Length: 137
Image 1 (spheres, rainbow, N blue to C red):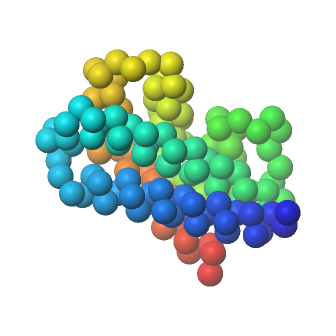
Image 2 (cartoon, helix red, strand yellow; image 1 turned 180 degrees about the horizontal axis):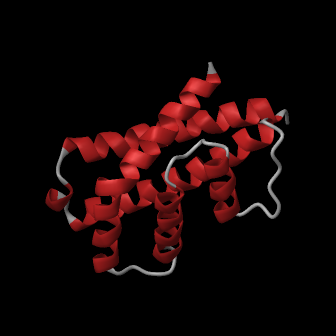
């Protein structure tokens, strides 16, 4: 598949995921979410993060930057070096939280990630979203 087409298709999926995540966070304050809603937000965070780093990878590949091995950490480093993201550390923190969540179902961890999502991660997703949409034109 053409890499230019692939990153545009991936961007459509990231766009939908990000919009759903953002709208849920805008509807009500995180501390008012029920346990079930918190679990749903964790799921939205996880798939939005997955689509974000994969969209960055596809974009980089469309620009002729091939990453080996393809890992989220390596993609984040290349995206930071290319100026796609401004704060590499927040993306590394997201990656670590994403990895932690795949191995634990601890509600204290959920709250920790949800606070980071509200305070730091949503802004990073928004900046990436805006940057990618500008590149699509």
